[in-house]
Length: 158
Image 1 (cartoon, one colour):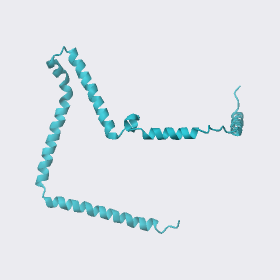
Image 2: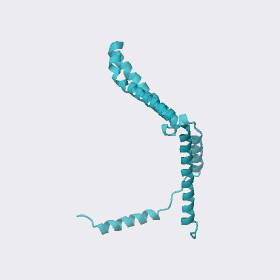
Image 3: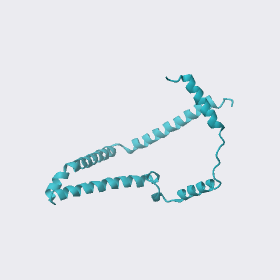
Image 4: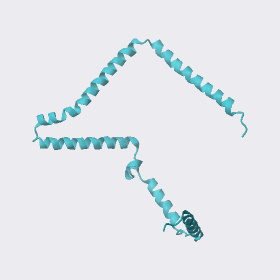
């Protein structure tokens, strides 16, 4: 036999009321002082004694990159040992993995050369005009925003 939802609701209210009527337990008198002392001790720790989440972002990135590089070097060392210390087999095994790096470097060099050629053909007057245009548009946006705020919100009663 399954109890009715009304019976369950009454039972829930009864348990809730009974628990609410229980006296509150008091914390030990020294608890607050111990908690505050522990918080101060943890706050005084240097970042390298704290967990990884508290490390500065550049240090976390460097650690992540260094760990990945160390894992890659270890993997390459294992492959080299498995190849019998033969450098030609080692080069053949890892050359395809670094091909993307060579392609990326050549792409970056091509883009740099193209950008340099394009920027040298544009007159300096145009660059100054572009900077002045951006500054004027920023000032116009700021002015329009201030005007809109003044019209919409400054006359409201608090």
